[in-house]
Length: 388
Image (cartoon, rainbow, N blue to C red):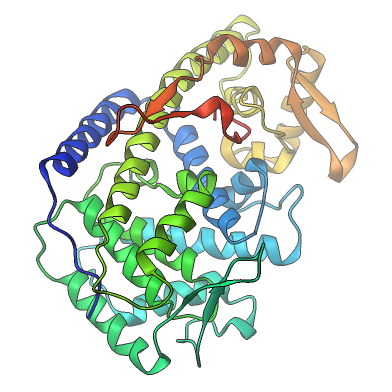
């Protein structure tokens, strides 16, 4: 028996409708803009950063971008980088499956995604169900907060989840995705990586349901920035061990709130991104620069460190041409260079920093869609490098 989707009230349906309206506005906002790919790239990076941070694999946005671009990291090392790249590869596969006409959920698919994420450490039994009991504990107190179901039930529970995912379901897609996440994470079928796998599965369900631009629909960034509430809701619904008879409505509302707030954040980012890119294009025209230099200036204006390999990758040019472009931008005072040779990187100059300040919006509060009097002040939360 799995956790069963609760009967949704008019309130849940109203919030779901509001999220759909926000997504429609986002689709219109990004449209076929030239900078769409850049915003999509940043969104994927922040999702990777957010989901891995929950598991203790912390990387900068620049290194998450390096993972998206298939480049070497600036800071991340060893296991952290292996975990980030594993997750990136799994999520890349999820995006590939989004419109696959021959797709079907299966236990083997779930195990394959797990292998992709954790293959760097064979002690985690990548791609295999856990061999025995498993416990989740509060790292701060050492207290056991959850025990997964007996290992003898794991295979059958996952098969039941697969049947549920492949079956017809009239519930809204965000609710179906949330329930897939809840059931997989509480079955806890793997020795490690259960949270990442559950979040990956949630993103896969969203992508498979035809949501436009699935990289903009993920709530992984939100979960990474609201870890304590995420853990708290799961602990409350899980109630210490496998209790599928419990009501998951609190979890459904938490996920819908996450979708609402993430959509609001993405709309704001798209407006800021549009203004920023227009200003960068004006700068390129003013200095009569090659159009490709837009990518170098856009990356650094966002507050990222830029290296030669990343610039030549996104601009699709040779290493020598990239070096000449970057040197020229430094000579014009549009970039600042740091370090030498292989360790050299570039940051925004005073000119491009001013663009970032000028095109940003004030950080407003995002209401709880279920309780209008409970407000979330984004300015008081830990912020990623770009835009918050």
